[in-house]
Image (cartoon, rainbow, N blue to C red; front, side, top):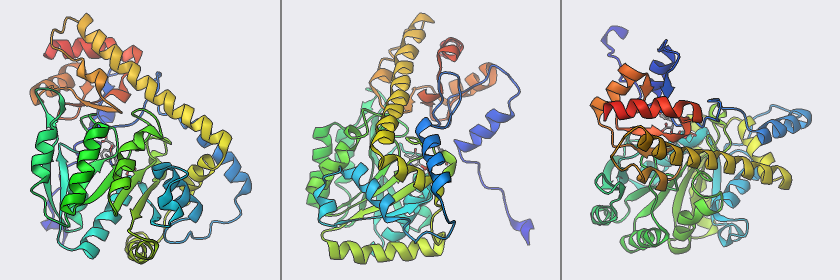
Length: 396
Ligand code: PLP
Ligand code: TYF
């Protein structure tokens, strides 16, 4: 039976990690996958995560199933992180949250919810975007279209193209937005642009859906939610897929959340009953450990403050690498202006390197970058910076 099966293409990013691991060259550098590395090139467990785990280990009394949406404590903690502790949406019970297996699991639940409950609408996705977005929404049977987002000349947002393209969307269509630290460009809308986008969604009857995988990596945990909160002030309904893989370093625990905001408490409860029935047929109920860690940290004032500092340390180190990268390229004799890298947010930037240059970097210098030219700044360190920039200077 299996002889008819043909091989599936590798994931463009995770496949690169496999190639990197198999590369015997000891001086190799991985700027492919978006995983935070410290100055020593490691991805350590956060200190607050270790402390929360110690508490959980001592207090845990059962491994019995969680409810389909996870615990209410986790759901509330996620809502407060997204909309603020004093959000009127929470007070009015217009929000419901289901724990999901990672940001990807949350996106997939969202996709099923859209397909089953909102019908044959189109999901509008930025061009470019995270490699998995079209796949996840397509897997639920939804049509996807792209809106222009990036101007390769200015290395900035192409907001005119965004507006022109989204004006083609029909009432009921979904607009996928990156909450902050746009993957792969590192370019986020300004507050004025968020306002404009929210008004466009309201006027045209579009449903905003936020993919929020890097809260805390741009300017701060609260600050990074500004775009989402601008929307929440203007539109009656929206969806959010949260991931805690990066900001809690819980990559392999698969911790995420699907949140819906409805017009009122009654519609929130009814809509959420459909979310629960979707989760039930995919994974039944979510894994407990990672979400318990997040809940423990967010609900303990001391741990929470310490966690915010750990996120700030990751954010600041990446920003420091952005500045050092631009300076080191100059020092290596690169004339082209790379200063845009310093202005961008989060783990990623588009380097502008073309496919040939990306291939040469890999073959001749053991430097791994995604084919699109996206670089993970989080993989740069003070010690790999000079060989990295020498390699880039050589292929430019
Ligand atoms: N969305 C974006 C924009 C991402 O970069 C990622 C990266 O992993 C995800 C979603 C998926 O998150 P998770 O790893 O928690 O599934
Ligand atoms: O974009 C990235 O590098 C991260 C990690 O299928 C990732 O979001 C990449 C690809 C993928 C899942 C996670």
